[in-house]
Image 1 (cartoon, rainbow, N blue to C red):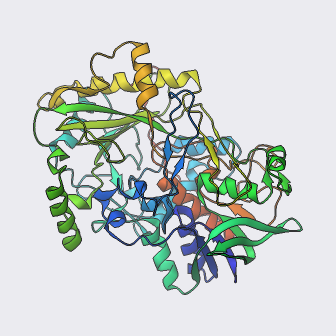
Image 2 (cartoon, rainbow, N blue to C red):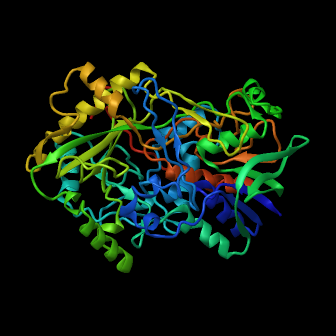
Image 3 (cartoon, helix red, strand yellow):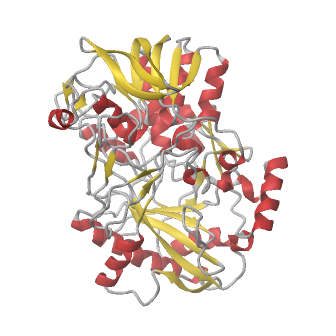
Amino acid sequence: MEAEFVIVGAGSAGCAMAYRLAEAGRRVIVIEHGGSDAGPFIQMPAALSYPMNMPRYDWGYKSEPEPHLNNRELVCPRGKVIGGSSSINGMVYVRGHAKDFDHWEESGAQGWGYADVLPYYKRMETWHENGHGGDAAWRGKDGPLHVSRGPRANPLFDAFVQAGSQAGYQMTEDYNGEKQEGFGPMEQTVWNGRRWSAANAYLRPAQKTGNVTLIRALAQRVVIEEGRAVGVEVKRGKAVEVIRAQREVVLAASSINSPKLLMLSGIGPAAHLAEHGIDVVADRPGVGQNLQDHLELYIQMASSQPITLYKHWNLLSKAVIGAQWLFTKTGMGASNQFESAAFIRSKPGVDYPDIQYHFLPIAVRYDGQAAAEGHGFQAHTGPMRSKSRGDITLRSADPAEAPKIRFNYMSHPDDWEEFRTCIRLTREIFGQEAFKPFVKHEIQPGAALQSDAELDSFIAEHAESAYHPCGTCRMGAADDRNAVVDPQARVIGVEGLRVADSSIFPRITNGNLNAPSIMVGEKVSDLLLGRDPLPRANEEPWMHPNWQVAQR
């Protein structure tokens, strides 16, 4: 089999590229190891905790024991399904802050500053404010990806935003518009009551053109002849075959699997490849390095009123919600329940937000496995720009074996101070007048834990990944020895091969990573087509006028 372009991975960026290439009349083969995304567990927004815990949909990766987190092995869900991680994620939509992308450009990713990427965000979106205000001029009107807001009917969503105001923080009607900093409504990739994944937004319309062929197979390595990628070796059932690319191969297999595939193909740190008996095609020491993620804590409060989602934490209520959603695509099942958010700065002298909040009107683990003591609510919070770095390495040369994932969470001393700050600032927010009618007591960490040492012990035991791995095929200048791809997303040292997913991020962006991952697919599709990039934007983002001297 062959096509002009072969894309590995039907995830966030892969689906976006398939759509744009097909729209331009190019023939594309997309290789995806996972199967169908049909069924309520994926398509119903409120069921989000299920698919990320199902081997059918998830690669099932775990980190190596994390030495700074009591040697815990943390789960690292990655979508093994049509739509990739956009089919199993929390559906939270965050573009990232303007300064994130300006940092990318400053670190060697020329053409990826905020003025360059904002037009792609607009192109990919159809935005719905759902009666909650926002910045229409900054948002897209006719893109494939529908972005909406939940109903925000529960009074706790408003209490969270009001508490932020009472504590002296900024308000924002649209953290994806001019002003990220502040408290306001959260956005979700939900449309007409369904998860609006990259598969629903991009892949299905692309397939309807007749230009896209989707193949279910395990990609084993990129086939490279005379320094050029010419195809991908895959395993389908027991048969091994090569799917050939007339023009280019693009890896969009995630920040875990893209570096793994590069290394299996002979592209990576030469000594590490030699350990596994892999012939070196291109010695790129940066492959698998620079691994980053967001860690978060769940700060939980017991509720004095029975208004939280806990009242639905039983089989009968779940069945009723499920049935309503199944037949009408409305009701509680039609939202991810993350409907209020905040981005704040941790201290004076920090120029843009470095703490994120997701507010949830139930006290429960992200995986949905355990609800805390009856009625409660929680804020997910953590620092946005940890200085810790980890790596992805091969466990063996067997393509079927999972790689070693070492995040090195909390390995930088600043991480501890930043997390303690998150806890203390959150306690202050929950202590505001707006929460007085609702707060009974603090469940987690618990009011007894106050000293630095007590909080550090809590962090080590309870910090969880927000599931935002990135950075392992870092984009940078072509002469940067540790960069893996150049600003055109081309793998340095190999012709006809690109990487386009969250692995190319030079540094992690503010917030959830689905939106910037799709944006990468959108932007790289223009590069693949040889098109000029979209004209740079002129909009100037809001910055706190007193950031040098004020924390809020």
